[in-house]
Image 1 (cartoon, rainbow, N blue to C red):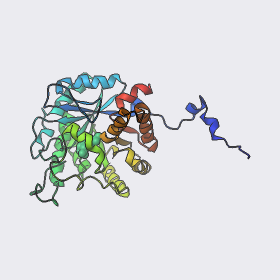
Image 2 (tube, rainbow, N blue to C red):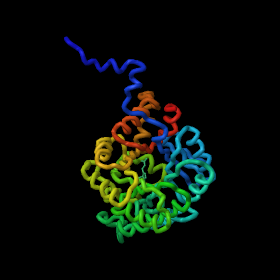
Image 3 (spheres, rainbow, N blue to C red):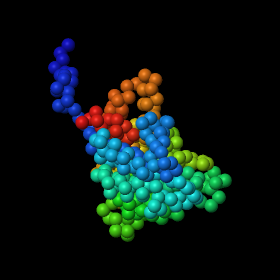
Image 4 (spheres, helix red, strand yellow):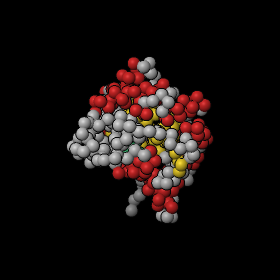
Length: 327
Ligand code: PBG
């Protein structure tokens, strides 16, 4: 046998590092942080080991821990003290997220991203205001256009509170354009939009819904989030968001949708983000707890794969775990 081409030459110690194609860096990572107005103590999230909901008073300290781990960016989620049909606490200047943002942006150097959605703030748990009668009629759903104006208010309230990036996650048609206009009209033309452009109706969000108390009280999100079976449709969503002014394009979840990450990367010239969601985190922890998987190794391999698929930015609950390993 004549073996002239021997790829193993490049896998020897020393050489392997030199020819590595993908390098994961703490600078790629965004750490989610949950701020909770219903508690004055930190509350651990059982299905997301290592994560907790923190009271507003602890937001700065929580973010400082993230920064100390070597992660510079956080995305803030809020759990309000009260919910209503409209989700009005989502845009209150003294809302839980707005208060946390003010403190964190005043007292730390973290890059602060705000998740812009209504599901944690509405009493029905959907990502927008409902069409009349939707509570009893399964074919009715979220009123898209009535929701847009509210999303604009949420984004502006977060920008007013210091957010440098807003991340609309509600999958409403036209949300990016509506938010861009609202931000610009309010003088926030320097605030960027990282759009959850291709967000799937995924069962992998389960633990997050415990964490943020945002499960729909009835029905599900299939009327607005994407069908997991569709990849071409994601490209259409992405094109619309780029047209409307999205600065960063996100795909969510990440691991089960790496083909989508890759296709989006090839299609657009904007930065691509991927959200390594709560279920992707929980399943590695559950297996590691049983001694079935090595947590750090599988987390690093997962995140490296997401980057290899084409993501420039990775939102992940593993940020604090892996960043120290990457330094
Ligand atoms: C809000 C939102 C969700 C997540 C991020 N923003 C929940 C949902 O759509 O049900 C999920 C994050 C995760 O699972 O880690 N719309």
